[in-house]
View 1 (cartoon, rainbow, N blue to C red):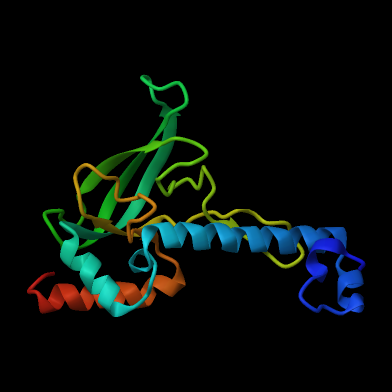
View 2: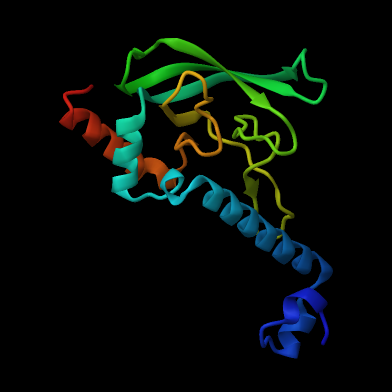
Length: 191
């Protein structure tokens, strides 16, 4: 059989024997990351993650505020009333306001409860880790998240950084979503 875990599904013995222990760890890490994301995405619903313009428009319509923000600082502290709980405090400045009462240049603070390891919040500090970086020739490690976020606020009682929110760090794959948000704001007489 050679190689163990990666050798199912009709793989040739030469492929199985070519996987080093490090390669096998990377493969397993990738499989587990995909499985975790798939479970996470399924529990939240595809509309939380899909780049389909219909889902972006629906999220824009539900939100009270849609903002492009720069994170000024983020820190975590113990929740005084819960020995296992943590609070992540995120301070931000608004770069662009597409919907809602926030103005460009305005600062804000969001306090999110982070109960590790099953937090329902996407930590801006990536702690607990929800995004891993996998570089060729390197083991997976927690990714450093961009400071700029596209934020959808849809409830004063729920963190805009919750796992099922559309809020996301602004990576290159989200530039198209940002363009759609700009168009939605313009079509509704927004900014």
